[in-house]
Image (cartoon, rainbow, N blue to C red; front, side, top):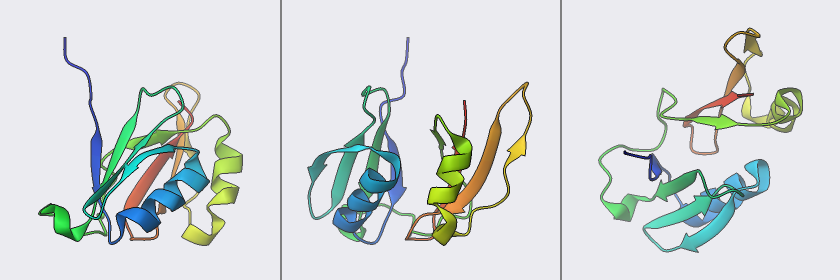
Length: 115
């Protein structure tokens, strides 16, 4: 059986981005190096690796599509906390999920969902 190990996201500064993701989404910083930072969800079921320019990642920051979704317990509160990141409207339905998009400080599109 396979499991998702980590998702990778290109950023300008792993240190600055780790601080932002930790403050906004409550992810724990596991490690910070010049080329990358690793963050874990509180339950350690989700790992985010922020890849800086010296990591050799081929994609530059500013992804125009969301490579993963972030699950939050209160979607209204999450949207309000991202008001400075130009969040889109909350959309979706009770059958699948409610969601919205916003950008991180590097311009990467984020998809925030309630389940």
